[in-house]
Each structure stands twice: as C-alpha cells, then as structure tokens.
Image (cartoon, rainbow, N blue to C red; front, side):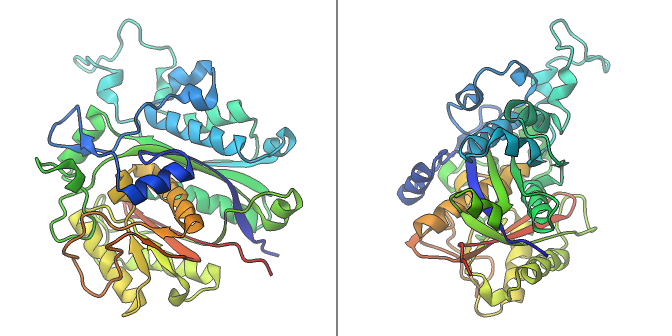
Length: 404
C-alpha cells in the first residue's frame, strides 16, 4: 500500500542565508546579494559569501577533490543529517539521492592547455574526482555513514527536484523508510559564465545589479547565475511519527517528462511540461484548483518565461494560484535550483509569508496572479516547477501536514 511521505529535516546554504529566520528576514527587508562578476563586469551574480565547508563538515581530507558546487552539496547534506536526529543504524539503511552538474571551472583547474596537453606540475593524481558527477554522493556517504540505495541525477536544471521526487517515490512505494535528497551547484567561475554568455542565456549589461533579474517581465534579458545547496530528509509518515520527528511538510506528488524539442530551448507551448504537472496532480489526488501557490522556474529568459506563463494560464484558466519566482532573489542555481527553492518554500509556508517577484513591472502575459508585492499570507499547497536544458521537466507538490 502506498505510504504518505514527509520532510523532517532540511539543510540550506544560499545567498539569502542558511537558517529560516535569516532567509525570511532578508526576503522581508528585500536584501538579496546581487553583484557584478569578477570574471566579467557585464555579468551579475548572486554569490554565497564567506562559505567554508569546514564549518559544516569539519576536517575532511578529501575536500580537495570537491569542486565548489560539490562543496555546497556536501555541506548542506551534512547539515540536514545533523538536524535529523537519525541514529547511525538508521543512517546506514537510508537512501541518498543527489543532483549534480558539470564542473565548469575548466580554466581554474587547467590554467594552461597547450596542444591539448593538460598535465602540469602539481596536478592532483585524482583530479578526475572534481569532474565526476557522483563525487558529492561518495563524500556524503563517507562523512555521514549513509549506505542505502542511491542515485546521482544529472538532468540539468530539473535535477535536484527530480532527485527529491525519486526519493519520495522510493519511500512511497515501500523500497525505503527514509532517504536524504538534494544537491548543490556553482557556476560562478570563468568557464560557467562564458558558457552561459555564449548561449545568450544570462543577463549581460550595465544596469543596476539589483534590477538584472526580472522574471516574467517584458524587459527580461536572461538569468542571473547563483550558487548554493539544499538537502532534505524524507521519510514515511508513520516512521517519522514513531520517532517523534518534527514534520516540515508532506510531499504528495511528483511528475517528470522530457520535451524532445531542442538541446537548449523549451518546447514553445509547454506541452510536455504540462504533462509533468498533470502527472504530479494526479499522484497527489488534486485538481489544479487545489494548488495555492506555484514556485515557478521563472528564469528571466525570454523563451522560458513566455512558455511557462502561457502554460500556467492554460492549465488554471482565469483563476491561477499565486505565482512566485524565487530566482529573482537567489539567482539561478542550475542543477540545485529546485532544492534551494524548496528550502525557501518550506520557510515561507511555515512563516506565512509570500515574497514578491522582484522587478516585475510589465508582465509578459496578462491574467496570471503573479505576486507583485510581498505579503503575509498562508498557503497550504505549493507546486514547484523546474525546466532545464535538454528539455528536462520536473514538478513537485508539497503541502502542510494534515493528519487524518
């Protein structure tokens, strides 16, 4: 029989902060950290300042094999484990579902490549570990003692939401009692910025950095890259209740699909993104009217925003839920965006506060309930949407815990 699945611990590292009080305070005070990149002055980024993995993990000799994104992943996972109250015996049986992206800091790792030759004096013997996608999972297992079923998901910007969704289904279908899921990423290096700039995906210009990210606005010019990590403990409801765990929210639906349309741009009408949404709603036993708030992908890119806005209006008609775009606050964190957005959604749900979509003055489509001003407002159900390069789509539905 399918089980109900709940979230009972969370760890987050973001440019808005790493604890719920700090995050909600920065949302209310409208103090996101957007600055110009040191690699390209035309590009705006949202960095995590003063991050030190040792603060979360302690001494760990293999940390030299972790790229910056992997460090966020490992640190947020360690925080979630530490806050879970799980015994070592339980940890040994727990699942581990990790999202990962490529290490784009190629120039930083290999500052001189001549005639294709990469070797240099001082190159680490195991430099390959900084480029393997499963390195964060390996490090998390070594540090925490998690030894159960595991999966590394690399589905671009949809990856961390998909990792969480896969963990949810393993527990729901009785393969696992509990699992940790999430991810971390950083592309705030020369290689990452160059790649996105060449693809014409990121904002580039000389305007005030605070106005660079403007999802769903007619004047949007691309996303602002960010960095960070988010991790969660998911477990069966009865398992959580038996050990007296604090329940943050219930996960009740998940959907995923693939466009098969373009290597970079979404299917223009959101046909397959809509399919992922409908699958998630069906699994949750909900109609579209049961959703109180949508945490949109909301990148601020021209093609994604118009596709997503049109899809929302098509599914919900004249009565759309509240729509937020958290990337306007933390930037786009690539494979980890869904994990950080979930962490912020959990905080907003608990605090009863809904943040505005920053810099939204002229919506690209009318008739959508975009949140234009932050407000004290209670929400019970939230749908999170992520759509990534390669046509990857992931949707997750959470709700406040309701016991029956």
